Amino acid sequence: MSEAARLQNVFYRVENMERARAFYERVLEPELRFADGDRWVQYRSGTCGFALAAPSEAHHSMAGAAIVFEVHDLEVLREAIAAAGGAVLGERDMGNHGVTLIVADPDGNVLHLWKRA
Image (cartoon, rainbow, N blue to C red; front, side, top):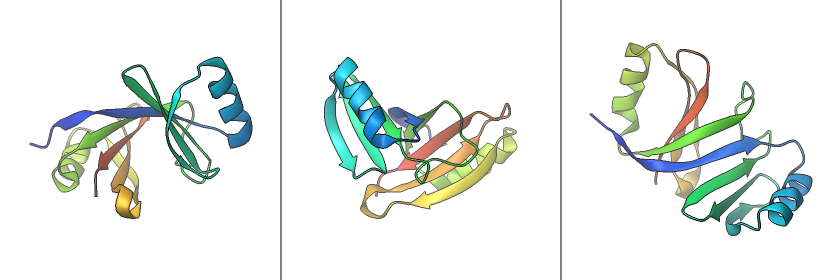
C-alpha cells in the first residue's frame, strides 16, 4: 500500500492572486516558500504550509480548500481511489515539481495526491 508520506499543504483557489497575496502577506506575514507568477504561491506559517492557486491551477469543480498529500506511488492509489468510492477528476504533470492526481472523495470533496518528481 502507498500511504501518504506527509500532509504537503492546503490551498485555496483565488480569483485575483495579487489581491489574495496582499491580504495573506499583510495579515499573516507568512514565509514565502515558492511563487510561480500569478499562478501559484506557497507559504509556510510556523510548521504548516498553505498555498494560493489561480483558477488555471485549481480544478474547475473546486470550491473552498483542498488538502494536498505527498504520496509515494500514484498508480497504486489510482486503483484504491475507485475501490474506496472516490474518483480521479484529473491529473497534472508539473514537470520538475512532480505529478498530482486531482481526486474527489465519496462526498465530492477535492484533494490532491502529489508525487515528487
